[in-house]
Length: 349
Image 1: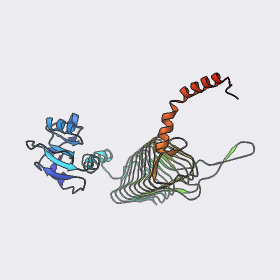
Image 2: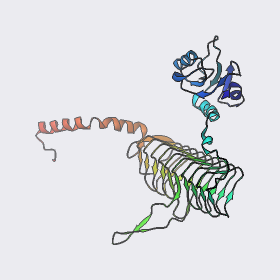
Image 3: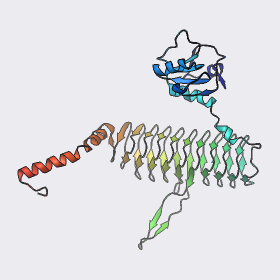
Image 4: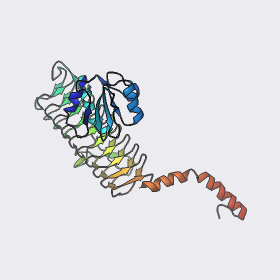
């Protein structure tokens, strides 16, 4: 349950109180078409506002281009960005941490090495394993069955969901969130081929270093470096199924959609964006502020800023033209066959 007064006290630059009773109460948040007399509603278009008003929603957060009718009793907030307003308000309704509530901070089934350091206010769920000399910062939450190996270092206020693996000597910054089944610090994929065609493993003795405010979705994998560090910069966000290979570097404030894959010893600069199923070849450097459309394949260095798409990658405008032209290939082939036949030529000549 949230009151309009609480929203006003957020003092967010993305949310401005306009009018209405500050005692208004919302118990949940729903889309405009499902709104009720108890829900807070975000609206970006006039039809959505009409739906919220018809449902008598008590609190309405609307884009600044919209105005509330003078006869409405709703409490009205204005925003320049509905998405940023959602980012400011929805944490008040997020019951995620209720999943981890337990009678004791450290569950009796957790296995913690006597040399490990556990910070103040940190929660360890059932069957958590904390290795030798591992360090867990203050006010962290470690979900059930998560494994943190020896000498790993987890920053304060970090949330590890159940069944996360953090390898030995790996480092996570503060305020990170890692979702279930993600692995940080598995061995990089590196083998030497013998003359007989067999493969001998090259040990991976480096580590992974992750900055502050990083979030990784479910089933991601970030491999440890061969000798030095695989690095993920501050503020970077991963969707599910992202794979970063050994020795690679992702810069600050990047956003990578599902199934993004980067091969070994490659890098991406700051403020990069990638759609789904983007593939980066090994030993490739991508500059700052590069946007990669879904299914882009990058095989050579790419300086930013700019938007790119296709395989191999080319400027986005060109890649869209290439994609459009592909639909005409069958017709062009038939036309060419008819031209050759008319000229009495064979296609092989």
